[in-house]
Length: 147
Image 1 (spheres, rainbow, N blue to C red):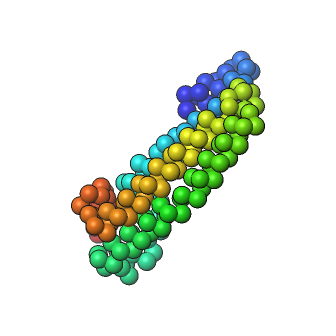
Image 2: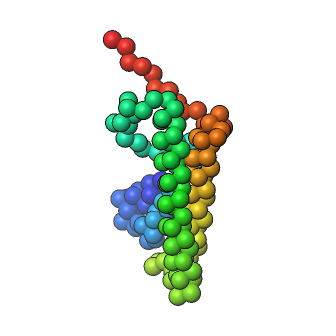
Image 3: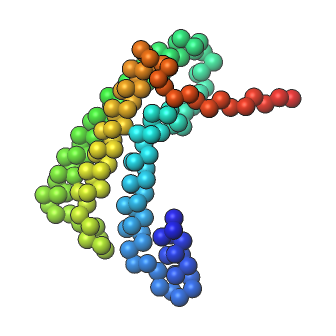
């Protein structure tokens, strides 16, 4: 955000933007998103649609959450492996970013590792729902609206 702020200020005041700001923003965005993914997954703070929640009792909701987390973690293994393969290919080809000539495989390997960690976190979270729900972080309860 600081870099974008100064890019806008420099562009507006002296018509001299930071030349590689767009490239750096893309790289920083990938780092922020993928580094926060395991933490968000562990805390269960993903955006959810809870239209069917009233149909599930407490025990059935726990089974549902167990299965959803296990399935999500299992399904993330394929993208993690695929991103790792693409990172290796980028490394072999010598792919670099447009302006700063940063090797692209660094960020690709980072994304692959973060995705792998997220897969493991979701599988562990699913197992915790099944066998040790007390180990899971408590969800923040929303205050009830009163009339």
